[in-house]
Image 1 (spheres, rainbow, N blue to C red):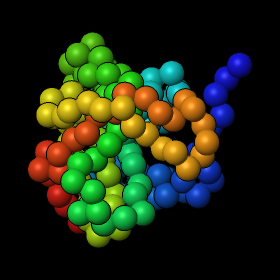
Image 2: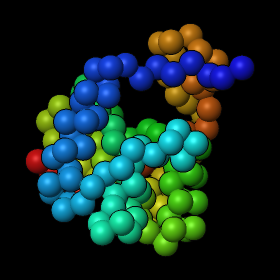
Image 3: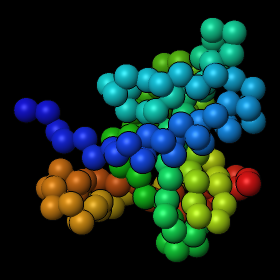
Length: 140
């Protein structure tokens, strides 16, 4: 049995809009990856993958929490992609007040059990990585 996908059309629309802005800023194409890769996009220039990218949208200011929490499984996938592809794997977050990016393959973090509790989905509680906000390069 496959797991329910919670991504909404609104999520996809925000991702697409942010994706277009990032393509201009980074001078590359962001190609959507199949779900088995765990990250959202491959950043491509002249057919060559130059990075992997995970895009997140948050409905709070950056200082609402002391760390950014992400699934340990996603962080592990990012590290594997970076190691195997010899390219960085970036997490790009759009908070309500600022944007930030960090390299998931090299950032510092600590692990706790955590996750979402608002969907009553037992699969949402898992090992999570907490990335200190100082690990993010902020931009607008």
